[in-house]
Image 1 (cartoon, rainbow, N blue to C red):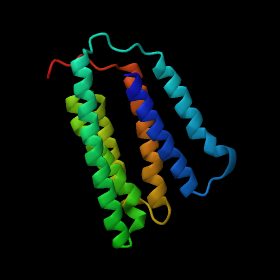
Image 2 (image 1 turned 60 degrees about the vertical axis):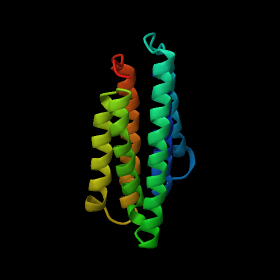
Image 3 (image 1 turned 45 degrees about the horizontal axis):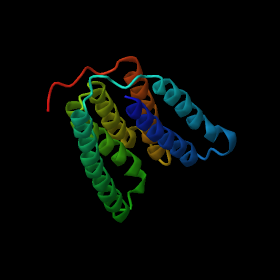
Image 4 (image 1 turned 90 degrees about the vertical axis):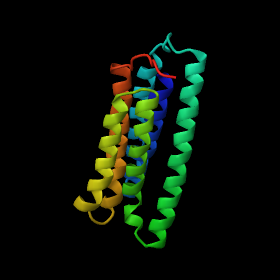
Length: 169
């Protein structure tokens, strides 16, 4: 669970910093996502590793995460390439939010982490709504800021509501 909190928080920080940069923010305010991530990560570090997680289960989860992260990365590169070719770069952040959201579905089932279903729905909705509600640079800022908030909330959720032991292999 510690690693879940750390990964969620780090990616939230990246999304948060990107949102601020795209919005034109400079200076000390860029440290805000770093501070939020540090606080959540420190809280997550206090979680004891689950005693029930056998080495084989841990290895299975690592392989699952690795496999779906590779798929996610390939889809992101493909989406960015297509959107750049179509001169629709304002949709890149929304597309990435949707892809990242979809990537949480097999993780939610395979880890299992029920909270990730909500993470998936929220990210896909944010990516889908942003191009409809926003124009200009806000088409980039909205899914980036929304993604950061969703990932931070997911990290806090992992801390507050730890998942139950997996019974599947």
